[in-house]
Length: 128
Image (cartoon, rainbow, N blue to C red; front, side, top):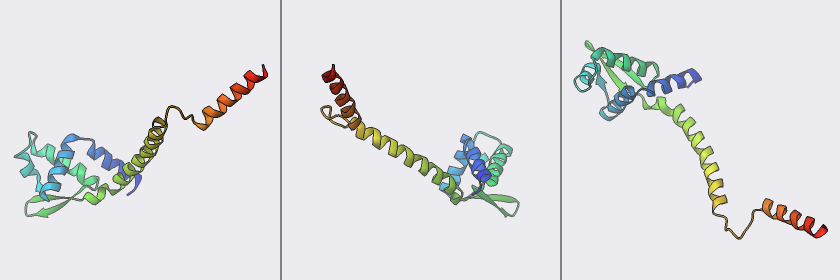
């Protein structure tokens, strides 16, 4: 997925109505603008605009069935986004693990840096 494609996915998912549509499509397998219009408090035209945005982002595909367009989810389009989120998550996991390790050090034991600072201070006191 290209950077512009990833950006389109993020922009498409930024809207709560589009997230709801995508979620319902994933749960149901497919759907039409008319079927969503009967369940949601927005117009069929607004639903079509949202579905077109999802389609442009590669999150759904449209199939012509008679006079209807049936939208089918393409969850594989989320792979680049989930990979990016996974990388960010791994970075935070490392930072949180280091923080946890630091916080769990026993109060009586000093870190190497603290020990070195204390040793210098003691040496300076002895020299005075």
